[in-house]
Image (cartoon, rainbow, N blue to C red; front, side, top):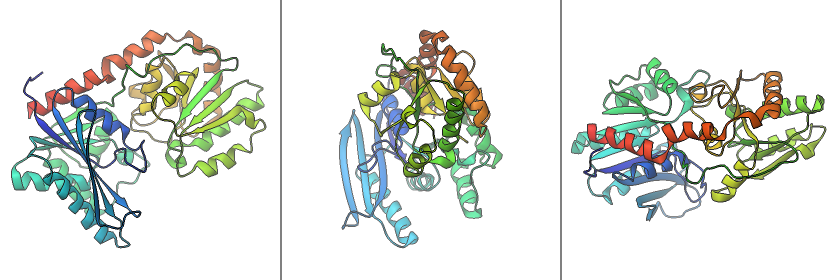
Length: 376
């Protein structure tokens, strides 16, 4: 690891902000991991229909990371909003000393910002892509979008993805770069850890953003109904909130025993960790998923998982830590949950945690990012 600290500016398309403290938490965790070894600044811009002035800049230091959030007034015109987006990023960059490297998180607009900086100042940039839009069943389309994305990716010094399958999916769309690297998501193993508990009724945990197209929560509820019909005893706790929460809440009412389902809403910090670690196993029913940070958090808390076999999930879930099932097959999902309800005590907590510590800890990912920056 190089001892010389470099100044890295993160340009983040998703990041926690005043209206959503959960958005892009995985980007924030990358920043915190990298900040152990280099000087990290973060820029995040957000279209805001609640402000009267064109730009509201919040510049603060959080966990030793200078964080500049620029809220720009949302316009009825997409062109004006796009102009303000680029202007907001320019205003934030002017507040910072010239970076050694720009690190773009999530394409494509911010890639254009980084490309402009490279051409104006010679600043190299790398890209980290988290978005599952390149995977089968998603929408990466449009001639202009594809053309611009190809240009941005080609001119990057490196492209990192959180899973190998996402890298291959990007390359299948013609997004070529000679330096693709897998840099996984981060889990803070010092806060996500097992807690002693005893549930009289086995407790299943589900965590998501309540967006049914990707998370297939209705499919999970269908599987829970199958368990009920079989007379299986369980409790399922749903953690989170999102656009489809009202619909999901109504969908649950079809269950015979609604008392088996509990919604907590969004939980943060220690409250979230306590609730997650109070479960006996975690279930994820996604139709597509880049990696599934919540799976890693569950492992760190000593919970095995039941998950659909989609996206990058089979890169981290195997028979030592969980059960994989095909997507959109509630009968098979119910079978897997029923099996896990009978076997979750057989999984070794230390084995579950060790896999996370080895590949996904702050220290491991921070060192990997440090090597990438200094290799440039």
